Length: 158
Image (cartoon, rainbow, N blue to C red):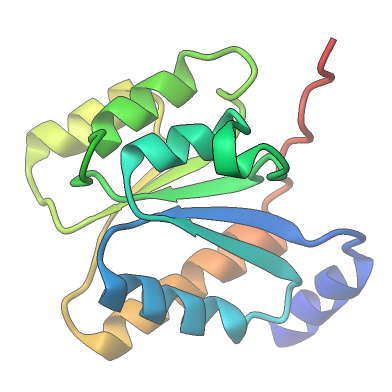
């Protein structure tokens, strides 16, 4: 397994652009630590509310020079614009819908699971409470999405 990851990392030509949409400083720090350990080159960008997430993906304001994310890790319970609204907006926009969105939340409500998948989330994961469990989950996300999954290229801007 480690050998496959190393080969994949060597074959990768550009870093994976990851957008983390999270308002919890603790969860942000743990995610940064987990992805720092990944053997695949990645750039982790962090925004702390739903409005900033949309500015980032639409390359507006302070994010005018931002690169299109290859994958989005999205909390549902966010200030300013809820993660559910962010997911809906991304997945209904022809230019953004191909970006994989992984919902990471403390919510265990069936309505959130069903709603997220109905809005075309690519995965729905509950954040573990324990530090080591959280790190393990983030490493697993990294292993899967950054080492094994073929991520879509950005569509032409024509």
